[in-house]
Length: 174
Image (cartoon, rainbow, N blue to C red; front, side, top):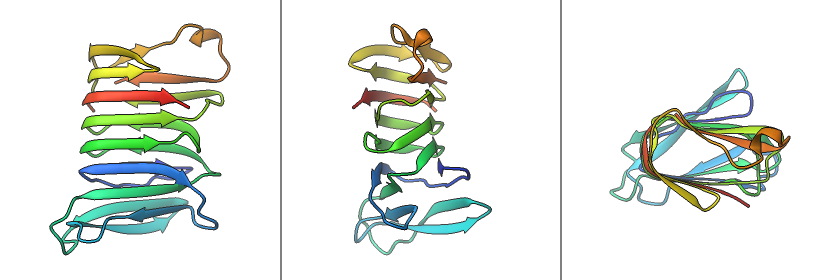
């Protein structure tokens, strides 16, 4: 399950998840699957939260690909809880308070905008390969903290904590 949050929580699970900011006018988010997908999104709202789930029976045999567009002017707290084959978070044109990768993935790629304050990025079960700003580490255990030079003194920074396991996690800044 995936949680996308401003103040509330949003849930989603898929084989491939693509998440990016977009100009959505008055919409907070938009979730879509390709024509012929074998999954279909179901969305409910309440208490300041939007909950998105995927159900099988989308009517097709196509991919379980989910594209989630987030309003680019909203500061997001993103929690990806469900396992996926691939997670692509292209957040460079958005606003981010936190990214928490709690569900496993074969590959997760996170591209971040410039930090404002301390922004946390966590991979809850470690990573086989972790690349942050072009520097690659292998065999990263859950709970490992990655700290760039000068991080402790920076006011605007990312806190990356490899605490769901992924085979490969790439974190880039724009």
